[in-house]
Image (tube, rainbow, N blue to C red; front, side, top):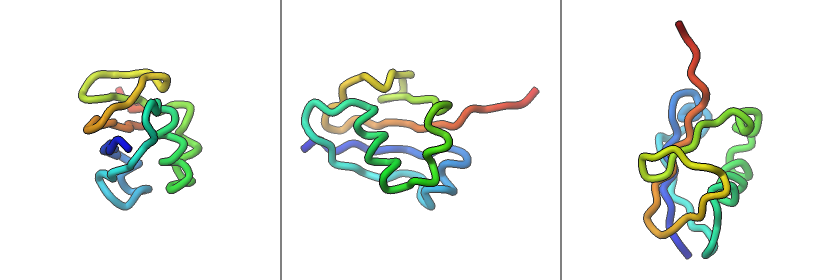
Length: 82
């Protein structure tokens, strides 16, 4: 089972009560599969689901991207300001 680290940024960090968390995912899992696990453990994040910015290993990614051992996924809420 691949091990993937999720970094929580901004308000998500407070909601998760940690800056990062390690998850074990099934082989051939996608970022969306990982998100489903994150939301099951942190249901308070579900309202952000449609607006999260996602990055895998430092590059923006899609929810359909496949994960592999050692990947680091960054979850970032939208940023506003002027």
